Length: 331
Image (cartoon, rainbow, N blue to C red; front, side, top):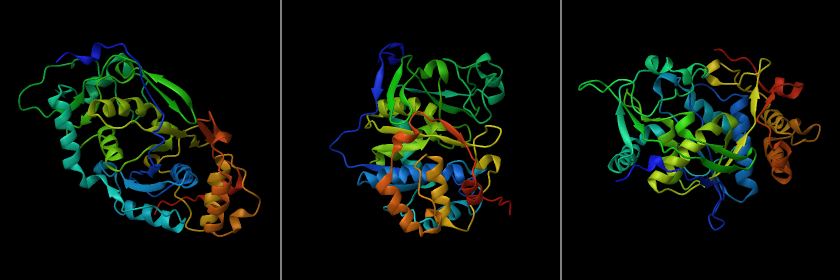
């Protein structure tokens, strides 16, 4: 088999099949309770599904035990119920999907698209390409490992990335182009500790659940080209993408469960949804936060205008309504 990585073609995605019913999803990681940044993704994905007569699924991406907190998954689901964010069908937990991920990995291996890698994070961190990576970002891996793999050494499984441009149209951020080989390199599909990587799992699960449209935070915009490559390699349908603006704190850092972002208040669920709508520039009427959650959703679905945040990648968490919608919850 010839090495497809030498191709210089451009792959384009972002146009949904008009014959497919809309199916979206919200897929939080249970590393902590739902916070305001996650609420924006939930609200945006929910309204896109409901205003397009589609289904809205919930999936728990619980594939990273060291990051997960006991009880966080149930707490997230409880918060969604309190906000009256009603999902369709059963909740899918990635921790139950190992067989599906391994089957996909076997298909890629049979096509000659994977390799074993014993490179450590410490070794990769010394590369010039990794000197300015943000904490938590996947480290760049060049074509070919830094050291030969020794028998008996634990290894990760990586994807052989083609050297070509990937292009897709994002419904909020516009046309996007990236060369994964130069930006990320050979990325991980299964970690050295045996856990399957996010990039593989999300592609397999989106296809298995019939997801047509992905609505999520702009922090995952850079992951999309990697996922498109895996969709192509596995012969899976292409999806339509919408990456929502991120909520950032006063210093410009993303609100994140891993950074102990304040949990959503247990009070005033309607006001919390209204705060997310205000962040997304939907201009809800004064006093809507005092209505019931059902009334808020009725107004929001009738007045959803994604074009109002077109091109917006981030925004500060400010204003009384937003501050009142969150609280410190360190217990």
